[in-house]
Length: 121
Image 1 (cartoon, rainbow, N blue to C red):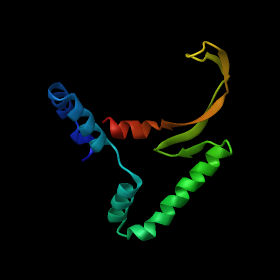
Image 2: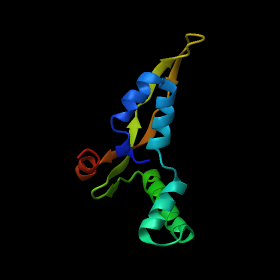
Image 3: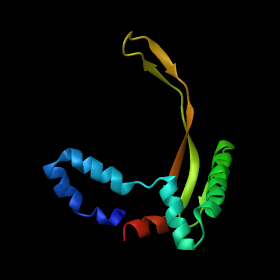
Image 4: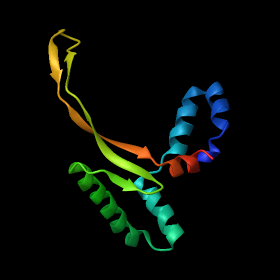
């Protein structure tokens, strides 16, 4: 099911059965790697076994670039980058003890304007 098919149907689905709404939303809005390979292979006209190593290599290179602190810009799609979250003080809710939460890198994606326009015509 495509994202565009969600349309106004989700409102009626939520009104009558909230649990079905979430099931509908999650089954309709997500594509796993296997499904992506199937769609790409049928669009390009090659077998999935030929396409899988290429997709794997793209993901490996994306991981490597981000691990090295590089931004990855894909024109008309968006930018993958790391955002650093500063260390902060927190509390252990059970004991009330003050603890330091270490800073960490969080991968993020910023869509390009052309991508936003494609999704929201």
